Image 1 (cartoon, rainbow, N blue to C red):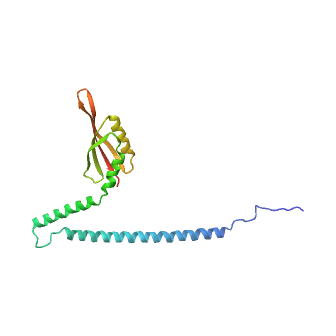
Image 2 (image 1 turned 180 degrees about the vertical axis):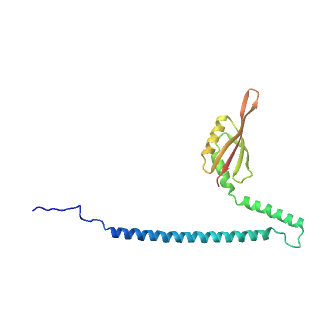
Image 3 (image 1 turned 90 degrees about the vertical axis):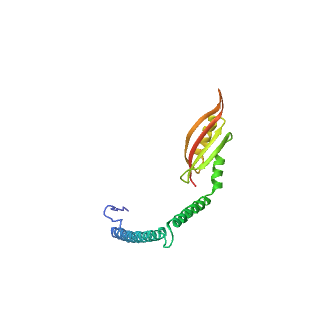
Length: 178
């Protein structure tokens, strides 16, 4: 028996089904796009409404109430600012920051100053080391420490009397990422 099959004339793909699937998926994507546009526009409208409400409330809070003198109002605003800075500083996890510096400080380094800069994440470190090699190792440990960034050596100078140096005085700045 001799079979002859002509594969060139037979249709193996159902183009109508493929077109229906493509059109329905495009329609579904258009509906999803319209829904997302609606959600974004309503969120932007709500954001604008809340921003105007916040501005109105802040305007009322910053205005001086009637019956209070300017000096009393200024003094009270100063007290509020003072207590707000205390609350902000108490909310910082100081033990975690100090532990971060302690873990990064190698043997042979003694810190004489550890202070927070104007921005709350900026810190300044000053101290003494036995040698510049120790200062370099400290710089490398600070740069490798997780939670610290932008470590910068501000200054270093040999301390000592006469020809014999007794150590190195140094200063660093860095940012704490907590």
